[in-house]
Length: 216
Image 1 (cartoon, rainbow, N blue to C red):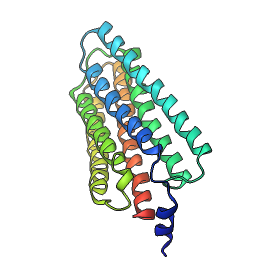
Image 2 (image 1 turned 180 degrees about the horizontal axis):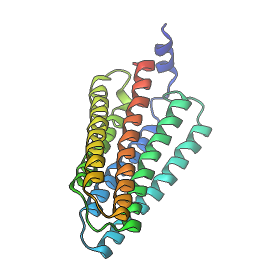
Image 3 (image 1 turned 90 degrees about the vertical axis):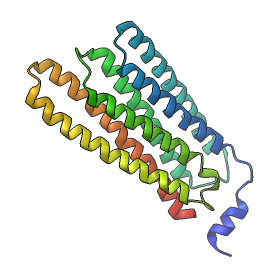
Image 4 (image 1 turned 120 degrees about the vertical axis):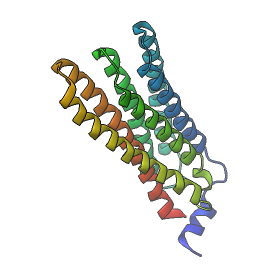
């Protein structure tokens, strides 16, 4: 009997990890939508309120990750390698942290104007977060039907490349046109954090692809 078949036989039919991971991916989508809303808000007080909501989502995400880690410690047989689940959780947590960090920078720096390309990257973060959600939702059947998840992983890679292009062109334009050095620093740091978020989304896809290679 193949190793994977033995593993499938031993794995409990009912597992708590999948719904917990699905819930974490839902938080990424929720936070990404709030970030996009914050970026496009022209009301300072409303922006602060939206950031407060992002922070609440990030805090609840931390609690959820701790719960998953606790389950890892208390579960004898896990659906995938403990290390893979642990790494996946860390990357999901990274994305949520960076969304929160991006929102925080908008509130702290309070730039005079919001370049259109920041909105463009925020839309890519939403697209990537949705791709993560769809991929994570496939984890319970990924060993038998990996193709849909692989399509979403490719979407994450595309999002990351598109964000890189947007960021590179934006920085070139910024240094050519922005005459206020303080505003230049503010906006560049905000854009860096947004671009890093898309990098982490792609990292989530790479970990799930590793799981597929091992078990599919």
